[in-house]
Image 1 (tube, rainbow, N blue to C red):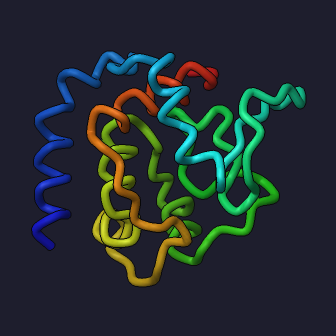
Image 2: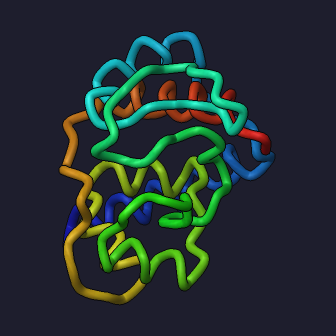
Amino acid sequence: MNRIFVALVLSFFSFPVLADGHATGDAEAGKKAFNKCKSCHMIVSDEGDVIVKGGKTGPNLWNIASRSMGTLEGFKYSKLMVAAAEQELLMDEANFHAYLSDPTAWIQEAIGGKGKSKMLKQRVKEKDAVNIWAFLAAHSDS
């Protein structure tokens, strides 16, 4: 519960910085940091251009910035993520950082539900998370 509170507080204080819709990190550094993610995630454009060849355990992260969570067609999400989709919970920079810190606990708190996220809790430095988001945002329409 303390982690969720800290994540929510950090999200609140980072909101003014993130409010303009621009990623705050370094996309080039994020590309390198994304190597930790590609065992489960790929980035492939809608046209089929492969940006990062990765695993299929997690959803394709192409165009993830400001997409409703749990809405990538063809991917089998957990019940918890399906509930997030039904509530139109957006994946933005603040939510990405909070989600990455403890996926199951954060999403349970965000939607007021129970269940388990398929995403494992990751040990990602805050600086890397900021840069990964910048890299993902660079491969999104918004």
